[in-house]
Amino acid sequence: MQREHTKPQIKTVFFKHDYYAAWCLKVVNSLLNKLDFKFVKCDKLQDADIVVEFRSNDDIVKSLGSEFDGLSAASLRGTSRFIYFNKERFINPPRHFPNKVLYRRYLVRHEFIHTLGVPHRAANGGKCSIMTHQTKLEDNCLPNDEFIPGDIEFIRNNIN
Ligand SMILES: [Zn+2]
Image (cartoon, rainbow, N blue to C red; front, side, top):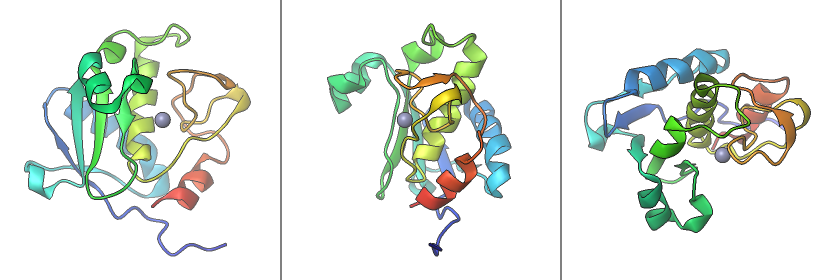
């Protein structure tokens, strides 16, 4: 079935803290250019489609509940889209990731794509999808920060 809006309508990002802002955008946009799309940084909160914040695990649990213990979070739709990156997790990636950089690249890409309305994608065998939940890895797949076959279609079909 054809959908009318396969291109995201949101693109401006306000970072509450400037650290990692440039790095995050570079990592995200270098993947999303395969969808002919990019996020841009904005300097005023009121101009933002998405607000990005690094929060302590305690603050995330307090605001979102214990099911987010150890996790980062993104709101998928609505007018107040946000990403909370979990500071402790950013510093100490889950053990099943071979290195910190791979985890951070996966996490940043995954959460930004969530803000477009895209849900999780199940995986079984081989590399995980960028939209597989890889922090708590319950699927049988290998940690991965790139698109696997079908990811681009999956994202296009779920943008919202
Ligand atoms: Zn997720």
